[in-house]
Length: 208
Image 1 (cartoon, rainbow, N blue to C red):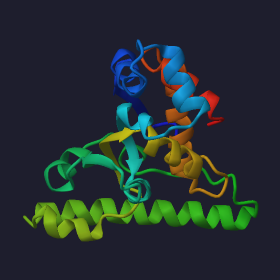
Image 2: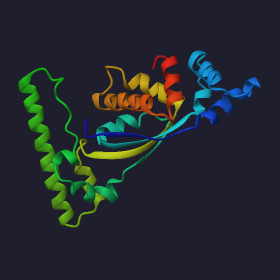
Image 3: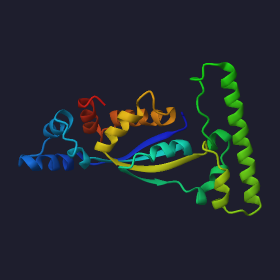
Image 4: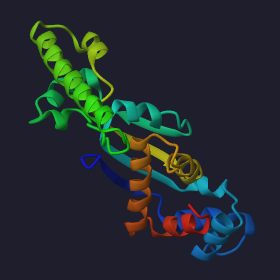
């Protein structure tokens, strides 16, 4: 999980949101009004004016599937067709594949079994892909032997209303651990971002 990078590339400037929220009341825009309308009164249609663009780098294809279930968002994903060769040129297998933490598996025998199985699958897939590429097989066919743990990256654009729903679902203890890690990291990034300070305040008001 430590190799997954979460970057907040852009968030709608606060003054634009304030102007939109102030429109129904024919009142001068203000941060206080925005916080009250969205964070306290929970008029979440107004939260749709807040749009964030994220880059998630180095997550697994398994996590990507989880992320894509959130439909009220736009995503652009790193292409396996065009980037597989470059991905496989990384220095180590851990740069190519996600090795999940196994500490939640209490039984040591099960943990060791899982670790050995992951290593075996990843090494076998790596050499199988290399052989197919050397034989001139196109990546569109090779993708069928790519394991779920292969790292990928994607750009993800989402409005705050949908993002609140994402956080509520994906920071829950029952969510898959990789997307839960990413959701928690996104929340942390917002809390540390000057550009997203007003978003952080709204989320705090909502208890998210």
